[in-house]
Length: 358
Ligand SMILES: [Zn+2]
Image (tube, rainbow, N blue to C red; front, side, top):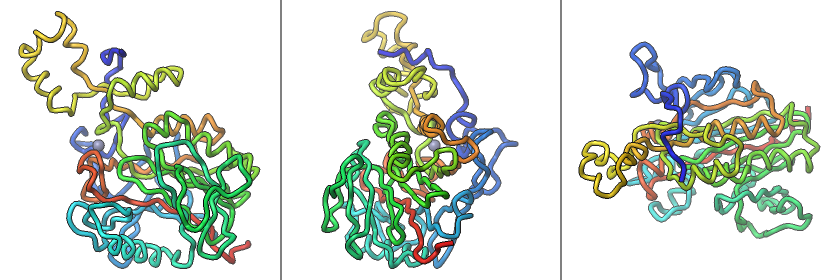
């Protein structure tokens, strides 16, 4: 049991989500919500922008767009043919949308990105720390090699279970699907290798992004000092209330793990009732203990990710963070937490263009 009252209360505008306009002062309002801002001083430049093309919108990171041999995007929900709960540009094969819609959406996006001839590499995401290298031995069908094993894990276009992909081969489009979890794209400009990582709290706890950098070093000879990281839109501390089990898990795994949490008013309705009517709950709690339960713990996944990237050897100035909270901005993104399991899925994609040897 971890006492949540031990957390230092920080305004989420500083710690968790600068895009959360409700918690901002009048003078700090974001005039243009599409303009991404730097997450914390010392991190990468204000380099994310929304690209609009053919009715679709996606985010591009300037720190990655500078490499002409590279192709990448973080999709939004804008554009697309899906209706209902997954309305917009749903890119995940989920029960609340038809496969025909998803394939149409994917085709539209990949065509607009110039990736229509790439072989799509994707995984059955399980919040694990399994990392695969995608290789394109069969045209149109990547093979997946689990890190540490030379033999392919699975072939015939069946996505294996895992949460990070990497490749150094042109023509393969690495993808991760998200709706609140963080999508992280990594680029080694020297070795021309790329990676895509899916990290929610379980992946962060398993240090998946740190391990991915480690495997890139091992497989491609990457020097982390020169790696670039782009952290896409995800749920931020303002909206990411977690249970005390999650707090305990992080505090058990990381030195000073409590620094990744903010004490904020609870979002759980039952806790809200407890806040408003504490006398109703006094009979269930020992005297004096109710107050300790009132603040809720909110996880700052970006802070965990940033620490892990730096711990793996990346320079802070090479870590770029898109300043959007998916749960605050359901006009722009899908949010599992805010909208439920039937909502759509976005995709972060990255690939090396063929025929760009110089
Ligand atoms: Zn939020």
